[in-house]
Length: 149
Image (cartoon, rainbow, N blue to C red):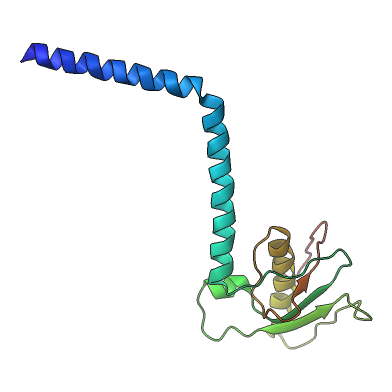
């Protein structure tokens, strides 16, 4: 019985040595494959997030335009809150070169500013933004800065 166990262990060691050598010999190919799978996983995660947010891929330019219909704050959507109210944003196109937000306390002004920043970052990273598809546009902004308070 012990002889059979010893033979089994020796055979296992041969297999492990062979596998180790194969991995060592193909290390660069394996590392490239892992990097490719990681990129695919990232793309799939972006797509899944966009689907969960019912997002759209906006048109992108470099003129500083954000034009979204019924844009909803992604964090509020992910928290699965009831009745997340969408907002229409149209900034940077034509004569719309500024934005004035007014309203009472707790009226959603900060939510709009954060929504614009998040949509800019999402579009920049290839994540569909939570808005209606008709005419959705979020240009690249570099850098995206926020000073809220």
